[in-house]
Length: 189
Image 1: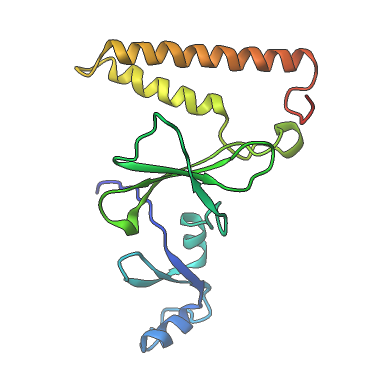
Image 2: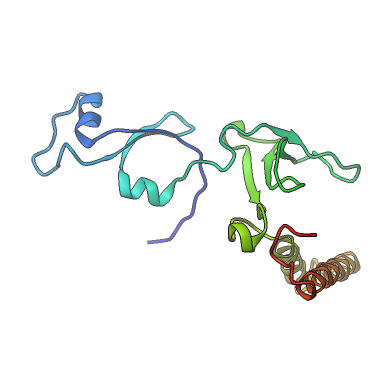
């Protein structure tokens, strides 16, 4: 059997196995416990199913952006030909932390193609809770380096890799300076 991975947003509410069978108008099979906890799940295409609580909680979690107002990311060099990037309107710690990338083509029910949640707050004060700037830059470098090993290799890719590595050096310099002042990982300037 092949393995698959998926990404979907669903609507769900807690419901026992017995309540689900009643909801469907089904008799409860003898080998099933009607008090098993679970969730009634409705997928984007309207299909409805029941999933045991443990399985549901392994697969799904509430979106980071529950009730967060998102605004379009504006930049002169950013195109919205295929995707649109948004970020939270209101945020703490001086910069947005939550970004969505939505497809502007195809099925609108499957519009969110990516979510990036950056670190919120100083790590030593709040713990690791998101992606660091350096993580995202390193991912882009990795992708471009792999393209460089194919027929899609180009001088443009090489220049981007060089500039992104330069950006990592400047971020590293900033971190070293903060480490030297014993304020790295804190909300102290």
